[in-house]
Structures are given as structure tokens and as C-alpha cells.
Length: 330
Figure 1 (cartoon, one colour):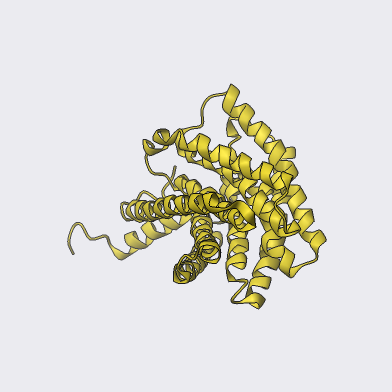
Figure 2 (cartoon, rainbow, N blue to C red):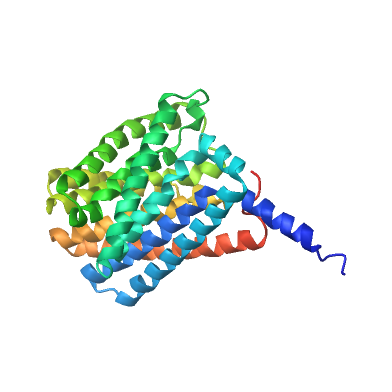
């Protein structure tokens, strides 16, 4: 046997070690690919983009979700202590709800073509996300180990993620259910946004690994706009307020683009993808409700940027996985 060829037992042990460090944050890749799927689908309906792109991406997002679910399920079976450590971690615990958000996004994507399956995905995703919300908020309230330095935009994911529920919920459940989840997401967005900006303004900057999560600031108002329009069917003054807050935050982060370009690649870089997708979808939604050619053009620009960002993230993630830089201790 060559000296460079690991023995079977050693190779198996290495695989188990990699599985033990399989990060729950990888479910953010599903959010990014599913968001890109919905953005291309919306562009097809509003601006005549090719339908096949969204259809292919929908399958890709679904396959990715199943793969990650199987891998994390294996981790739960074989390495429960490592899963418990992630649940207790002040930052990583906020990525567990990315699982339910991914399922909700897939429900939205599949609803037109497979309404029965999408309905069940929505039921499971909604129930799971409510459970994650109660768990995360209970952890925050009864904490013994949180500090202001732990606060970052990823804290939006467990609670503000509820604002996604009405997008498909208005078609599969009573309106009060969607308003319930929309209200949770909207009110606690304001609370958590205050905490996050306090931490950013008056304490040390985010570490490099978490800096990409600043893009998550875009998602709550962008998704809030989409959900509110789904609930009411109109773009009124409130809808415009949340849309333009999202647009301002997009411009703010774009003006700091070089800071993000200089960062090394981390899995957290997938935080760029879903918020950009939400902003793209919101812009096409604005165009569909009397926004005019300006918003169609802006939607195309955002879609091009989003597609390029996701492509780069896919390539960087595959390169990092091949180099053994993912599923390792941090």
C-alpha cells in the first residue's frame, strides 16, 4: 500500500470526524438556491425571463435540501454531543431555523406545480419554525452565557423568519394564521434590529467570519414587503415604507462592497444570497403592482448580481470542500 493511501479504518475515522463537524449553517445554501429559484420564477412572470431556469433551480434546491437533511440526520444519530454543542452555541443555534425556512421556500417554489406536496411542506415548515422560534426566544430570555458580542444579524433567522410564512400561507391556510406569523416577524424585526444596530454602533465590529451576515439586514423588510402584498393584495404606504427600507439597506451594503470582497471565504458568505434574492423578488413584485419600467430594470440588475453571487458561492464552496476546509473544527 502506498504511504499516501490511508488505511480503510483511518479513512472511515476521517469521514466520521468530518461528519461530526458538519455545520448546520450549511442549510443557508438551501435558502440561497431556493431564493434564486423564486427570483427567476418571479422574473419569468413579471419580465418574461425563461421559465426553464427557475424550473431547473427548483429541482437543484430540492435535491440540495434532501442531501443536507440526510447528512445532518446522520450527524444527529452518530454524533449527538456535537449537535447538542451547536444547539448551545450562542451563534450557531440561530442557523437551525434555516432548516424550516428552506422547507418554507421550497413550499413556495413548488406550490404552482405540486400543490398537495407544497401544502404539506408548508405545514411541516411552519410548525417547525414556530418550534424553533419558541426555543430560540426561550434560550435568549433564560440565558446564562449570552453577551452583547454574540448579537449579530443571524439572530433574525429564528424569529423574523416567521415573516416568510404568509407568502404561501395565504393560499393554504386561514388568513389569521398568516397574520399571526407576519405579526411575530414584523414586531420582533424592530426589536432585534435595535439590538443589532446598538451592538454595531457601540461595540467592536463583527469578526470576519460573521461580517457577511450584515446582508441579513436586507431580508426582513424585503420579505416583509412580499408577505404584506400577499396578505393585502395592494402596495400601499406601509408596503412602500418597508420596501424602501430594504432598498436603502441594499445601497448601504453595496457602498461597502470592497469590505466584503476582501474577506476570505467562509460558509457564512451564503448570507449574501437569500437577502439579495428577497430584494430581487420584492423589486419585481413592486414592478408588477404599477411600479413601471424603472423597477423592471432594477429587478434585472439585481437578478444578474444575485445569479453571479450564487454562482461564485457555489464554486467557492466546492473548492473549500475539496480542500478540506469545510466540516472541520473552528
